[in-house]
Image 1 (cartoon, helix red, strand yellow):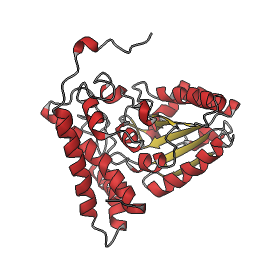
Image 2: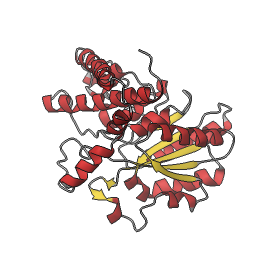
Image 3: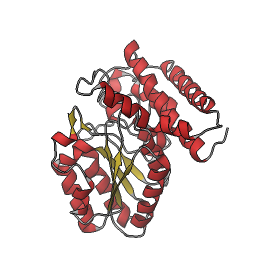
Image 4: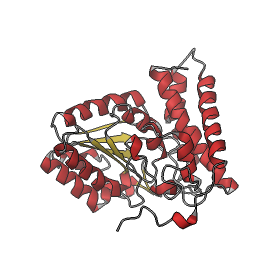
Amino acid sequence: MTREGPEADLHAMWRIRAFEEKLQELHKSGDLLGSVHLCVGQEAGPVGACAALAAKDALFATYRGHGWAIAKGTPLRPLFAELLGRATGVNGGRGGSAYFSAPDYGFYGENSIVGGGVAHATGAALAGKHDGSGRIAMAVFGDGAMNQGAVGEAMNFAAAFGLPVLFVCENNRYSELTPIKDMVRNEVLTDRATALGIPATRIDGNDPALVRATVTEYASAAREGGGPAFLELTTQRLVGHYIGDVQQYRNRAELEADGRAEPIARATAALSGVDTDAIERDAREEVETAARQALADPLADPATAKEHLYA
C-alpha cells in the first residue's frame, strides 16, 4: 500500500518502533547478545531528516542508530541478521548493534565512542566538497556528546572551511543517566554552534514534517556552498539508556508526560478518520517477517572475525 504525507510518516515511525521493540524481545530470549541502545520515542528525527537527504549523502550515527539506518533505507532482514550475529548481516555479523554500517544505503556506521562519528562526517564532507559528487554529510549525536572535545573541534573545522555537513543533535534531556541541566549551565545547545558562526536551529524533534522541512533547507544551502549547519532536536526516549537500564533517575510523572509527547502518539492523534491500527499492523507484520527470516539464517563463522579489519 502506498501512503503519503502524515500517514507515510506514521508508518515509517512504526517500522522503527516495531523493530526496536522486537529487539527487546530477542534480547530477553537470549537470541540478541551484548549492549543494545534503543531509540524508542525518538523516531521522528530519522524519519524526517533522512527523507530530506539524497541517496548519495553520507550519514554517521551514534550507537543509538538502528532507526537512522532504517530511515536511510537499510532493509530490515539483513539489519536484524547483523544484530543477531548472522552471516547474512550487513557486515557479516561482525558489527553487531553498536558498530554496524550499511554503506550501500549511505549509512556509514554507528560509533560507540561518544561523538566519534562527528569527526568522520566532517571528513566525508571535506571529501564531498572536492570530489565533485555533490554529496553532503550528516552527523547524528546526543546532547551528552556536545561536551566532547572532538565534537567542538570538528564543528570549528567545518565552519572554518565551509564544509557541507549537517550536525544533528538529538537532545533527549539525558547525557546517558545524567540530566543535561546538571551537565551544562546553558541548556540551549544551539548557542555552541552560533558561537562558531554556524547557522543553528532548535526545533521540536517529535514532528517529522518539521524536521524534514528544516533539514531540506539546510541541506540545500550546504549543497550550494553555504557550509555547515546545526540542528537541535528536542525529543525523549521512552526506554532506558540501554536495555537493562531501569531508569531510577526518572519519576513516573515525567515518563507519563513523555508518553503523551512522543511522536507516534501525537501523529496517531492527529490522523482522525484514518485506520492507524492498520498502519501499525502492517509495520509489525513486516518486522516480524524480517526477524523470523534472520533467525533462520546461519550464524557467522567465528573464524572470519578478523576479516575486514584495518589498523
